[in-house]
Length: 304
Image (cartoon, rainbow, N blue to C red; front, top):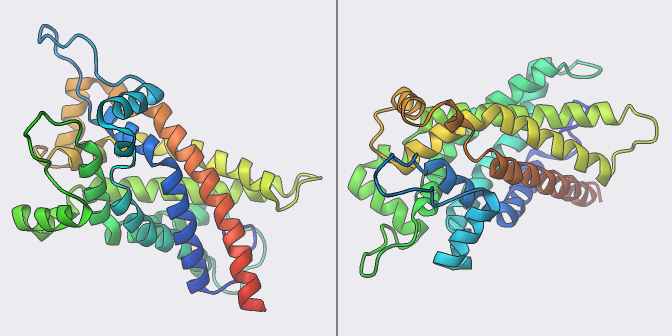
């Protein structure tokens, strides 16, 4: 996939299938951390004198523990069904299209290492295209994750992923499925560029160091680097996206940004940074390790 070589050695269908599989596997492994991240991001600052002294959720592991204790272990996998819908579409498209788009930008006769700026541009393009298709799955995932423990007798807003899609369309209209598309395109284009370009660049750099080969250690280090860069760059837009999707009262991206800044301060944009890195760092390591192996498997089938 993402490699120093600009030409892909397996078909687009093979790359798409490998990417979707790797993204889904990483999603299943790390969604408890994502649920914790969403709860931390949606948690508003306690108002002085309102009787709420301390925030309910504190830290990644604390949030995971609180959710598991109050709502049961299964609640940590809330949103897994739309999460897998999202990864099949979004993961498959953003990673599957990365090499073809990168090759398109450099031209078919290009020889040598692809410039970092081209890698970033390719990542921005495929991230924006992929999430424009997959936004409804993201919205449903956040809505399901945002719902905490309910009082006795209070019905759940949605009974499941498919019910959530139909309820949102019925009550809010089809366009509501693309709520938060602006910050979501910004977030996913930026994070996709940060992940894929940094993985590409780190891997390319490591492979030039004597003693390093295209093996699991190289993939592990490249995946960690990709995750860290992605969180540093993408956290502010990620917070705005989660708040807009979890709370329909915001009028738009700017309104959400301004209200968050005014009510919760600038550090709110890095709320959930540790769980976000725990999530994206581990997600990238698992996804890229799985992807590299899946691509080797597909290559052996296609060439055999």
